[in-house]
Figure 1 (cartoon, rainbow, N blue to C red):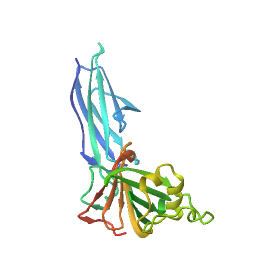
Figure 2 (figure 1 turned 180 degrees about the horizontal axis):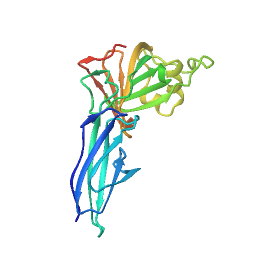
Figure 3 (figure 1 turned 90 degrees about the horizontal axis):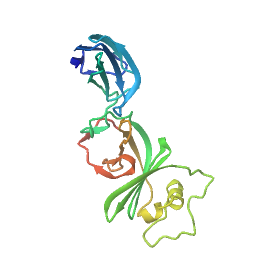
Figure 4 (figure 1 turned 60 degrees about the vertical axis):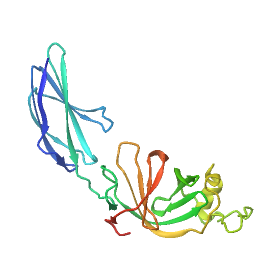
Length: 248
C-alpha cells in the first residue's frame, strides 16, 4: 500500500498571482499526480504528472479568492492508491466596508452608489443606481422573510405612477422604478402592501461574498445599519455594525 508521508506548501497564506512551492514525499508508490481542486471540491482539469517525492512551483491564478487547494494522488504497481490535500489561504484584495467582518470569506470590491429606500406596510424597497437594481425585502407577520432583486427598467418615457390606483388614507403608491416593479412584478404589491412614505435618497455601499455559489449580499442602509441578504433570496436581517472602514 503506498503512503504519503507529507504534502505541504512553503507558505500558509499568499496573494492571488503569487507562486508557491509545493513539497511532498511518499513511499511505496510508482506513480504520482497532483491536481488543483475546484471550489466545489471536485477535481479540475489542471493536473501534473509528478515524481513520487519532490517539489514544484505552482502559480496561483489571479482570479482566485479565499483559498487554493491541491490534491496529491499516488499509486503503486498493484493499483493501490493514497491521496492527500494541501491548502493555501489567500489574502483578500478588498476589506469589508464595515466591522466586524461578517464572514470568514473575501468580499467583492466595495461599490459606492447613489441609492434610495422606501418603507412599505410589509417590507422595504432599495434602489442601487450603480447596479440599475432594485432590492425588495419582505416581512411576514412582522418577521423578516425572503428578498428579491430586479433590474430597474423604468425611464423618463414611462408614467411615474398609475392614477387608477388610489391608496388608503395616509399611505402612498410608489413611483418611478419602485412603482413599476410594485405594479408589474407578480407578488410584489401583495407582498409589500402600500408605501408608508416617499422615497428617501442616500448613498449606499454594496458588497457580496465570493463563494463559488450561494453568496450573500451586504448593503449599507440609510440609517447606517447594514442589510444582510442571504443566499438565493432565502432570508434577510439587519446588522448593527461597530464601525465602518469606508465612508460613503
